[in-house]
Every structure is written in C-alpha cells, then in structure tokens.
Amino acid sequence: MVLLNFTLTPEAAAKVHDLLVCLGKFSDAVAIEARRERFTFTALNSSKSAYAALSLDSKQFFTNYECVPSHGGPDGRFTCSMYTKALLSVFKGRLYDPLGRDGAIDRCEVSVQDRPDETQCRFIVKMVCNQGVIKTYKLTYEAVDVMHALFDRNVAKNKWSMHSGALKEYIEYFGTKTEMLDIFAGEDGRAIFKSYTEKISNGKEILKHPLVTAVAVNTSDFEEFNVQPGLHIIISVKDFKAIVTHADTLKTNLKAYHSQPTRPLQFSYGCDGLLCEFTLMTSGDYNAAATPTPVPQQVPSRSDSRAQSAATERAESRSMRSEMPPPVEPASRRSTRRRNPGSRKASSPRSAEPDPESLFVRQEEEEEDARWEPVDYNNEEGESLGWDASAEHNAAAFPTFRDSGSLSRTETEDSNEALAPTQRVSQIKGLW
Image (cartoon, rainbow, N blue to C red; front, side, top):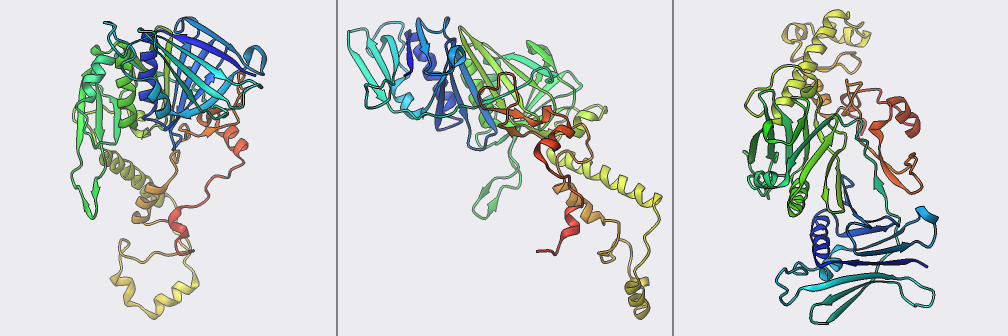
C-alpha cells in the first residue's frame, strides 16, 4: 500500500500546468516519481535523445506533502506513468487568477488510491474552487520503472548562463522549419546561435537554399560565459525552444553545461522549490574545438567544416603514399598489361581502374570513408554518447541512463565486448 497526499496553492498548480506543457513537447507520456523529500516529473522522447526531469521540493513547493512508499524504506519511491494530455485536462491554464474571478481555485488536493480494500488504483485530483465547488478527477495510471539520465558536471568544462527573457527574444528569430541549432563561441567576443536545416523536401521538390538564421550575442550580455572558442555544439531547435519558453515562465536564468561534441549537454534552471534539468544528446565538430586558428566573423557552414576535414585526410593520405613503397603487382595483372601495351600510356593515376588487391585507396573512396567513418575516427580523445542502463553508480538502487563517454575507451570496450572496425567501408563493396 502506498500513501501519497499533497496540497498545492493556485500559484503552484499553475506552475504544474506550465511544466506539463513543456514535457508534452518531449513525450506523450509523463512519468512520476514520488519520494519522501521530493516529487519529480520525468519525460524521455521516443528517440532517447532528450531527457527531462522537473523536481518539486516537498517543503518549498507544497503546502502539505506526505509520501510513504510501500517498499524501499526511507529511500523508497512510488513511480507511475500517465498520458500528458490527461494531466493537462486537469491542470488547466486558468487555475490561478489574482482577481479571484470564475475559474480560479482555492487549493488543489492530490492523492493516490492504492489500497487493498479498493478495486481500482487511481490518481485522484480535487480542485477546491473559491465558491465551494469541488471538482474531482480520477485518473488511471500505469506502474512503470522510472529511469534517470546521469550527468557529470565535473567534466563539463564549458558553461554559460543567461536570463531566460533575453533568450526568449532570440528564439523568435529562428525559422519555424529549422531543425538544428549550432551554438559556438567566436574569438571576437561574440556567441553565435545559428538555426538551420540541411534541406526541405516537398514531394520531388527540394529547397536548394535552406533557411539559416544566425544571432550574434556579445559575451558581456551573459551572466556567465566560459566556453572554448570555436567549439560547435549542435542540438535540436525544437527542444531548445521548449526549454527557453518554460524557463521564461519562471523568469529565471538558464544555465548550460557541456564538454565536447557528441557528449551530452544539460540545461538547468529553477526557483521557489522547482528544479528543472534537461539532458540532451549533441553533435558537432571536433576539429573546430582542436584547431587554434581564429574564427572569422562570418558564421561557418557545415559544408565548409566537412570540406576542411576531407582536405586534411587527403593530405595525410598523400604523405603516406610518398613514404611507403608501392606494393608488388600481382602476376595476373602483369600478364594482362603485356597483352594490352597501350593501356599503360592511356591511363593515369587519377583515371586508373581500382585495384582490388592494392593497399592504397583512391581519392573518391577516401571521401566516402570520410562520410561513413565512426565519430571518433582519428580522434583518441573523443568519445561517443551512449545510453547505458547498467548504471554503476552509488545511487544506483534504481535503473538509470549513463553516458558511456565518461568511461575510458578500454573500460567501454570491455563492458560492451565490442571489436573495433578493421577495414574501410569501400573495401567491402560487392559483397552484397
């Protein structure tokens, strides 16, 4: 049997409505975790690339709070899941009205019906209105095992903070059809928020010049700004807009913590007993962070960074060719060239047919390998992000997500029992 009862003021009930609207943009279902000291709403999107946890302090956020889980002792918890729209139908937007007009409430009482003498388990919400009218809602919930994403801020050396009101003005410039947001710091004392989409398809028609919007902000406008120049962190525009919009309802500062591209980024903010944390998976460019060259004022595009990376790999391949002797030509190919003496004069290294037994790779194949190579190829320090439910953590009494990039490469490979790639993609053409 679970004992869970708490009471909300009209202001607190309105904040619950706002956070449910925010979580509804990440997932159709919201998970609830109740402990003795806090009450948490969590959401994980379908692609498992964005995780949200909004915690309500039992002493500051509620006027009355009592939680006694059925098992687990002092550290036990009660968990369940419900549809976000079902909760939004109860916690409506006009719960709080300073003038006390119709629709406002006096208090909100919530309890969980989970007793042996009851035939059904329900999540009961009572809205006590100012006129003495009581509206009772009995919602069906599902018992689930709630998981959490672990984020280590000690390794997140890059961080910045800005008031949510200023960020709300900036996101209004982003196009409605843009998908990605590139956040990076230049060496000219400015931070760039660039929203873009690589292409827009409408049937057979493809927009050749996709919309790109860049907003430059002086670093002096931030409350705190400590980011490595040239480091590109790419996240979803939709997720960023949802976070900034909700943070603006609290009129507080939004803080960001991250380390390297492909490692998670976390946004954090809160006030009055409400703490909001959003952990997002990222992409980006390692070369931009490692290269000490100054960044021009013009915002670089993704195609420029890819071209620069491909040119670097081609240069390394040419130097390898000059240092290593050519391989011994097979006898079958020598006999073929004797029968066709004119083919040697007509061919050139650029137009020669690929030798399946050759050690070297043509330039076209190098570019293909650059497109399909792993994220951490030729980068011993970069680690890819993975969501691991093993959660070897001190607080790991319950399942959690863990960033596999926080482990060393040896530990990660041993735990996953995986083998590193041994050949290029271009070498296995024709096998299927």
